[in-house]
Length: 180
Length: 125
Image (cartoon, rainbow over all chains, first blue to last red; front, side, top):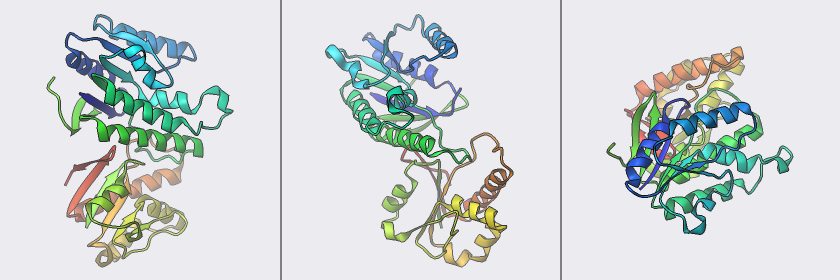
């Protein structure tokens, strides 16, 4: 099964994704795909909290910040929890070699990698962020990032069996369903 | 009137075209510079029209009330701009407030209200 989880920040998306991944994997392998590349102590502290929160749930952590289809290298398979599409796209678009411009190949790389993971994995749970409903006029680069993330979300929503929006810890099912 | 709302880039216009059998030519797109033109089968980006109202000292709800006969059979699309922090600029706050009032009015007038989320429809009226 493939699941897309979106919603605002601090809603419990990661916790829900963990519960779903544990349930879907049964006795099989489960991988937490950590996409965030830490840049400072604040990032490292956040990552430390996430590691502590999933301790004992039986995840192997894969730290993959770009070229996401590498999850499947060496015929690795099982249940993948990818957290998050948001960070993956930021890594692909704004890697330091691009001199402040977005990498024009980022969208296709992300989309193809994510869809390959969705197609090939035994199970996959994708976490993304809903950043589309505020009243701010952003600069062109930020607007390009928002639009590209939305296109990735929509591509995943189209192929995933289940699409869930989290709102204040509650689940809104936009597609499919899952018994927890 | 059918009303469609949702965040930026969620696929609202694509949904409208698919759902109501429209073509791109049926869609009028509002702009901050030019405002709105009533009478099209589908009017997109209504929040751009409300920004035009703010820039030109007009009230969006009043204008919509006056032209009701021209949009009562249309598909209207507006961005949901209501879930972020309070904007710092007074004009952006006024824009958000006016757009919110207009969406409330349009929802009350609509036969159906559909929210689009990641390209998927959620019927909310």
